[in-house]
Image 1 (cartoon, rainbow, N blue to C red):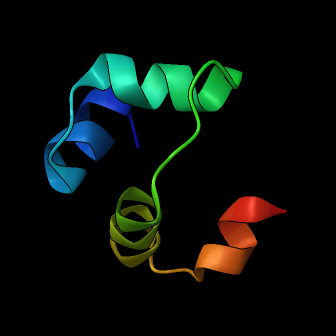
Image 2: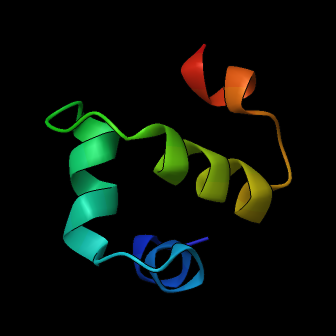
Length: 48
């Protein structure tokens, strides 16, 4: 899935996804939950 597609599904800008991937930004718990739901995984998996 592209950053653009993930961003649209989660409801954030693509830049936010890019910053999360590079470690430039840390996600809020709300964003982690939305990412986990969208990616069909658990929050704990995103934190590993």
